[in-house]
Length: 130
Image 1 (cartoon, rainbow, N blue to C red):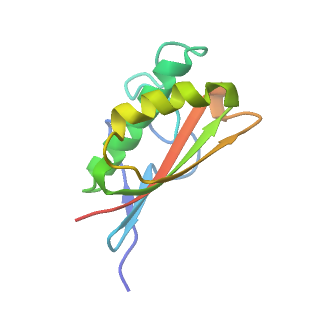
Image 2 (image 1 turned 120 degrees about the horizontal axis):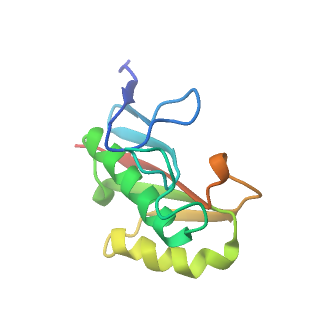
């Protein structure tokens, strides 16, 4: 049986609870939910009310963890998106296409009552690695 690897990178913010940024097992990578926090400061990109900056940073954080695990956005199988306002769905889709333009993994998006630290958007994914 293969060992589960804990993924950590300084290019993404530290976890806000008792969990890893991601884990890898065999050829699978699981990225924990990522908020739009800046890795250097732990503050929200663009500020606490800037949805677009938070969305871009959350996706950048997810990408950095994938890179640290030996994977990439092109190897993502599934993405889960959590929005505090479903009215931002179209805006999120436009930003998402900046990261996933030709590769279109399976995805779900749900509206939630709240996110850690008052975030506006959170993303997590499952991917393969070489």
